[in-house]
Image (cartoon, rainbow, N blue to C red; front, side):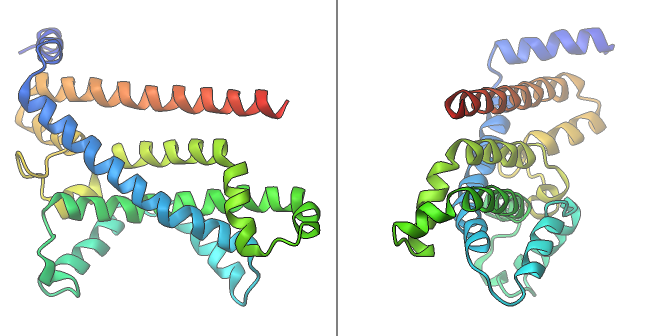
Length: 233
């Protein structure tokens, strides 16, 4: 099948809502959304805490968070694989090669991004509002939700960036998920597999969906940023 025919067949799969394609897209969104929500619940308070409190080794924590933003996916996948394998400390839960393992791998990748970037934003706001907050007698613990709420537009942008990172990831999820048809096959791993098999229509169809998703995320980030700038103005 030539490339033109493959493209037309891919469009046909999309327009006819092919069940295999929809199943892969649905699992991809489910895994990435769950991972980003968990990473946000853990990462935003962590970033705010590092920004607000001064403690021994704080500089090292900041350096580690910033460094982990560039954590190679295969390294994250290897770490999670070792944790969840039968010989690992969490092997008894039987999570390896399940969607749960893929969620954990994506959380490991996304959490440092959310924590590091939210720390920067909260620290910036703290420098701007410190005197007002102290004059109101607010403790650091009470400052945290106030500053996080004030940074909500920036945090939403960070959250979307994290979702983009999670949804486009292939190495870690393939290592811990196994790319099992109907169980752990997501868009990125399916594209790799179907291209290797010569099934270009399905690979192209998934590629179109993934590209559209990335474009929507970037458009949303731009609109959120513009809205924040208008309100600040």
